[in-house]
Image (cartoon, rainbow, N blue to C red; front, side, top):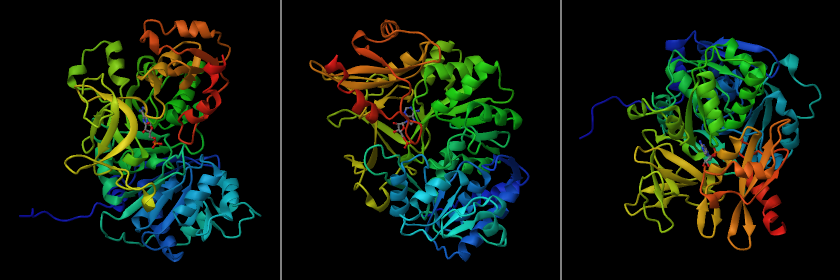
Length: 546
Ligand code: AMP
């Protein structure tokens, strides 16, 4: 017997409709590429998203057509989020930090019909314009006054002309909630990037889960600043969450340095911000150097890479900002776990709390996880035993776009499909998961595994070290041994021996790196992660040579 409740499809358009109706005068504030601050409301955004939808219809865009964006976090990008998906087309956010060949590849692979771009990315657009077979026109997200003359791009349109040239009279169509709404490619550090195609249903369910108190804990009393880019996994879903809960949104545009972020956080009285560790390190350095504090920020979610304990302590103990450590992936829309405390953690000492918070957190409702040993057997949740992390749930990828790479799922004995994350993790009795490594980064020394992340955390908590990366270097006896690459803080003095001595008593002796190499910088990829494959190429023979 079926239930007797109304059927309503879960559609992206319902989020902006809700925000307009119930939080119409709540603001969206953006630092623009043009240099100034722009502010308007959810009601304005909804009107312009409908104008976008009419403009797309006039351009001949049909349901399921892919429409590319190369853009910062800003109000025009937000209008596209809703205008494109709302009318039934697929918004394809492209990461401008990818290599130009990869950008051309994915725009072509996705068969993008139009490409919207912020002016910052004009050189990129010029570089790919002749190489994308399917793109009918490029739309510069600016007004006519700022439109570049002689851009060299034949089919260049002006966003403001296009949007303001169309009426806001538009009724969002109703369609099957399983319809695709957005497409995001993985960073592709090895091989070509693969497309993850989210549906309206998966995105709406993810939005409900992300907003929950033990997830990102968002409400109409929040002012949210997503530093995480809208071009990578939908800024962790925050443009959707803000509409669902009616939170004010603040977009940083291209201003991601410590000073620009701090000015915006303070001017707009931001309560909650989201970012990867490297961005927060820049902000914290700015605060330290200027002797500044936060007047409104209450919490921050940090993910995308392991949050160094030093960053956690500074935010929490130094500035009174609660840190939520989260883990996710492009393939998970992206949220998998969040490190919200349980009642039993009340009354813990700061040190004990930090140890819990250093883990990547508990699964949000909707995500199941398990860890498997090399023999495929499920491992215990004892906080010590580590294995391959697998997940499943309604916002976890089932297949990559165009079936790239074949079926990624592992089918268990009950015929359930599980997505192998490629991460190695432990899970404790409270369900707190901790990533010990990417499976390809783990250091296999004499058949035993050493966690590169743990070594990096210890190194980066040394007062003279700005950041550190630990890689597997070839070793004649043990196959692989840890080699530490470290970047010193400006003017700081420390020797390799002193840094290695700092590990004493903090980890098992045989985990201590064999050597330290000081470098000027470590290479970062398109989503703020250290490119360890590059470091391995450069340094894997270091111990053999020395
Ligand atoms: P991406 O799909 O580019 O967002 O990358 C996902 C990968 O980033 C995961 O599989 C992890 O390896 C890594 N990652 C994400 N969040 C964390 C975290 N909090 N700690 C450690 N690694 C993380």
